[in-house]
Image (cartoon, rainbow, N blue to C red):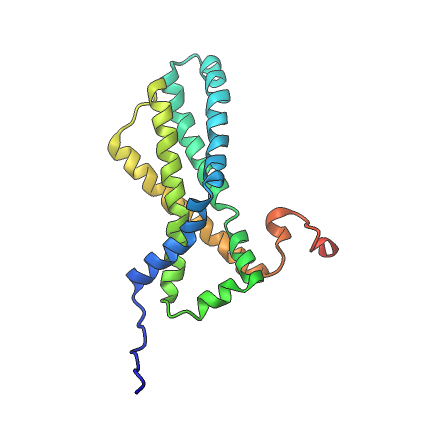
Length: 187
């Protein structure tokens, strides 16, 4: 006797969780990229904050009130601006096509990838705020939550633009990284 199984139906919440975990797993396995992307804002905070405090003539806390949000926006710009390159790599290797034929909700593919971009942004932003706090940065909890939500929306939007660029350009990875050896004849 052969046993038949019912087809798997798309469930947006379950599928989004699966896509999110799939996309986040490489980051968790290799935290070097997360640590390295946090290093640049920390260097900017450590190098430029004392200079700005000295030049502005204001107390450290007043200067950090406008400098730290700028650093947080920089995290979003650098963190999500080139995420489409990962999608291009998946399209070139064929793993994206395998994902498309999986019994997943199409919306969950987008939502899961977007959440994957939001998670590192939130973690890095909280770390930057905690590091700046002892130096006079005042934190309003409601403002912090609202700011993180705005950063998340900005990150999702910029990531979506990056994904759209990747889908529109298919095999032209040089749009993200400059001319590579594989595509140098097309530059």
